[in-house]
Image (cartoon, rainbow, N blue to C red; front, side, top):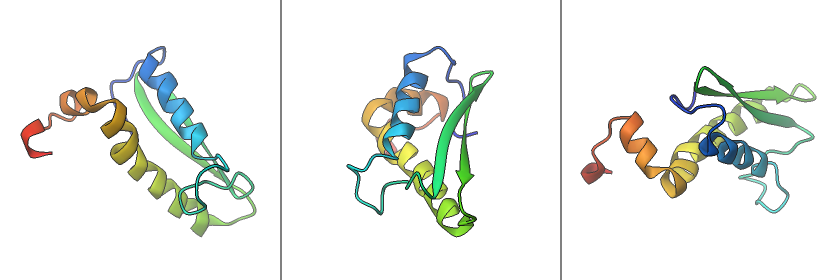
Length: 99
């Protein structure tokens, strides 16, 4: 699970799916992009708990593992920080004065 308490029909989940899709875009620099010829990431939502699945292509597990770690990192540092700050404070019970 990457994000708890995100209803499947919510705008946040729709935005998250678009965010994950955007990580495959050729407009991103290579070090931030997931090459669709080498791996594919997709989100899923079960009972409001969002997970990520990464499919490895051509047996390049090192590349895929690195990209999955980078993607999760970007979820917390880009996706949540830029568009869902209040969610992050509420769900993770964070003190906004110490972020």
